[in-house]
Length: 116
Image (cartoon, rainbow, N blue to C red; front, side, top):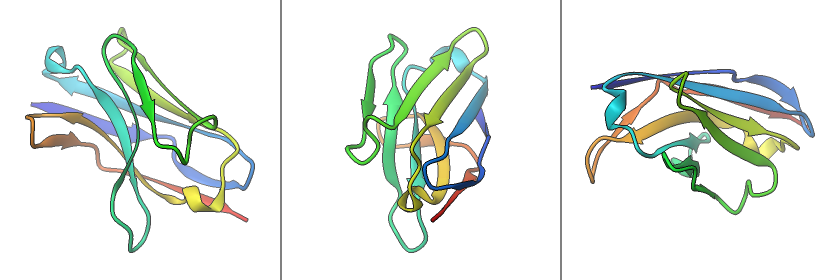
């Protein structure tokens, strides 16, 4: 089992920045990929970014150049630095790591609200 706990969400004005954190515990030796999804009201959950244990990253087109994903393996923590935030980035952000090929471990989510 893996437990994931997010923190760092909040309210920010457009153009501002936030940094989200995701702390992992439990069977962390099984973790390879970690990443972030987000879900806005009445929209499907969408992949924002992920990072592998070797440091390979991937981003959604909508956040490229603005968001940066990173991980500190010594602290078992992953981060999402979000700059130049836009109102359309408003969503609940969830960190995840794959459990099986078809399932994932999820955090509880953290709200990010960007005001215009």
